[in-house]
Image (cartoon, rainbow, N blue to C red):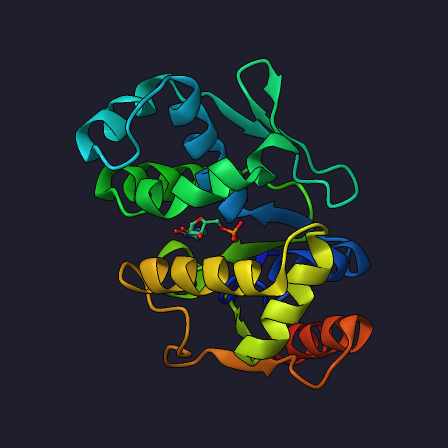
Length: 220
Ligand code: C5P
């Protein structure tokens, strides 16, 4: 049958990545973290000493950006050329510039093509694709489309628990700034028509995964 695409969008700190990965694992689906690709390009631009605010210079790195991933949720690795950047793309210096990279139109077009090619190449029955514009731009025709949200104070608390050694105030400030910058490019705070909202504010991790799987079983 047709590939079952599960599109998941949401703000930073909503638990999107870990929830989507766990849901993919339970469903036996492939998994695609689109934010990781934007982060990998940001890492690549920094390596090349490109000014992240110079849209032209950022776009010029695209022909040399050799991005490869495995879509197995249990062994998710991000490669740029020969470099395994799975950990490096989480560095604060990458996080600090990724929004500037992601607002370059050529970047969005190129990465969207890449995501569609990865989806088309999936050998499993389905794939969970997670990001900011999956329900609206990358896979608007997906049979399952979910907006994963949580109140801002809960998202900040979860993120500062993940990042040890950073004060809650700093983490909160960075999270808010990144969401604000990203919101100017794509709307991931409001569910588009036909998109199901899963609010994890009062749910723990397992309950959130259950809620996502329930939507998949109902809508796929
Ligand atoms: O999901 P994550 O926080 O890792 O995403 C990193 C950044 O990548 C976001 O802050 C945003 O700038 C960009 N992004 C995007 N579109 C997506 C996924 C991520 O612009 N679909």
